[in-house]
Figure 1 (spheres, one colour):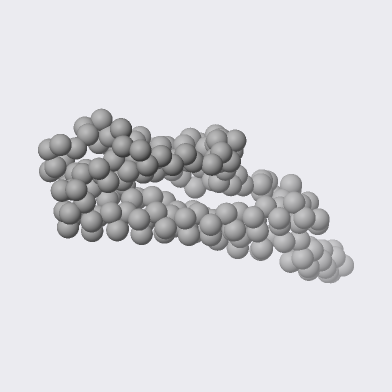
Figure 2 (figure 1 turned 180 degrees about the vertical axis):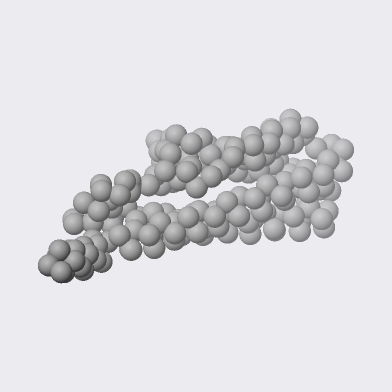
Length: 199
C-alpha cells in the first residue's frame, strides 16, 4: 500500500513538474513553425507553377532574349529539384541549400521582368501582364509567409534558450531552429546603381 501511494505521489509530482517545464509549449511552437514553413513552401510552389506559363508567353515574342529564358528555366528546375522535409527545418546546411535555390529563381525572374521592359509587344500582351501581376502577388505572399515563419522560429528559439525551458530542451533534444538569412549581407548593403542611359 505504501509503495503504491509513493508511486502515485511520484507520478503526480512528475506531472506537475512537466506541466511547468515548457514541454507543451515546445510542442505548440514546433507545430506552428512547421505550419508556417508549409505556407512558405506553398508560396514557392505557386511561383514555380507560374514560371512555365510566363516562359511560354514570353517565347511567343520572337525577339526576346533566349539566354534570360534559359536561366529562368534552369533556376526553376534547380529550385523544384530540392526535396524539402520537416527535417530540413532542423538542418542548417539543407535549409541554406534550399534558400540559395529559391534565391536564384527569384533573381532569374527579376532579370526576366527587367529585360521584358525593353519589349513593347511583350508588355502589351494581356497574358503576360496578367502573369506578371500574379507573379508580383506571389512574391508578396512569399514575403508574408517568410515573415510569419521568421516570427514563429523566433518564438520557438526564445523558448529553447530561456531558463528553465532550456533544461527541457536539452532533456528532450529540442535544438534551436535555423532561420532565413541573407547569403551576402555586404552585397545587399550597397545601394543599387540606376542608369537611364540607353546602350
